[in-house]
Length: 250
Image (cartoon, one colour):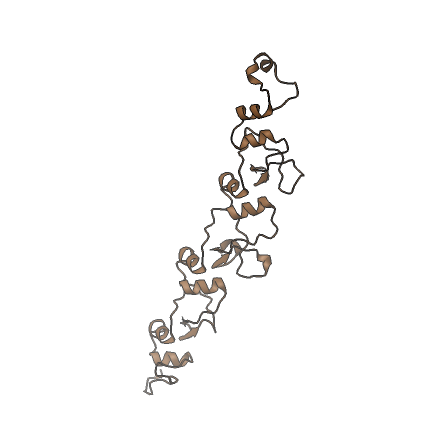
C-alpha cells in the first residue's frame, strides 16, 4: 500500500479503494503472511522461492544480508517461516537438506551421511551422501536431487539397490571394512578368505566358513582336499592333508 498521491484515476473517483491508514489498507487487501510484507517496506524477514537462483531467499532488501533476495512480490510470492518449509513446497525436486543448506548459504554442509546407489560416483556398490573432498573414500558426493533414494545403512542400500550381490559382501565394500568370510576361487579350486584375498567378482557366492565354501563352492573336490589347498584348518582342528588314498594320475 502506498501513500504517494499517485493512485490511479479510478481509485480517486471511487474512494472505496483508499484507506485512512496503512494498517487498514494492508488488512483489507493483503492477508496472512502478505500482511507482514505490506506493513514492512524493508521486508518481512520471511522466506520465498527464487526459481532463478534455485533456492529460497529472505524477504529483505538485497544486500542487507547474506540470504536477502530482494523484497517479495506481495501477490505472487508465497512467504514461509523458514527455508525448509519453502524448499519442501517450492523446490521439491531438490533434496530438502541440500536445498536448505544452499538457501542458508552454509559452507559447512556435510550431507546426510546416508547411503545411495554408487553408479554416479563410479562405484559398483553403495556410497554415502557426503563430500568427496572430505577425504572419506566412502563418500560419493553430495546428493542434490530428491529422486535419489537414500538409505539409513549400507546393508539396507545393498539389499534394495544391488540384490544380485551378497548383502554382506556389498555392505563390506560400501563401508570399506574387511569381510571375514569365504568365497570359492573356482579357477584354482580353493576357497579364499575375503579379508585376506578380496574377490573382484561381486556376484560370487559368500560362505560363513571355509568348510561350507569347500562343500558347496568347490564341490568337485573332497572337503579335506579343498581345505588343504586353501591352507585352512579342518573341523577336527588339524591341518587337512588329504585322504591318504590312491588315485589315478592320467
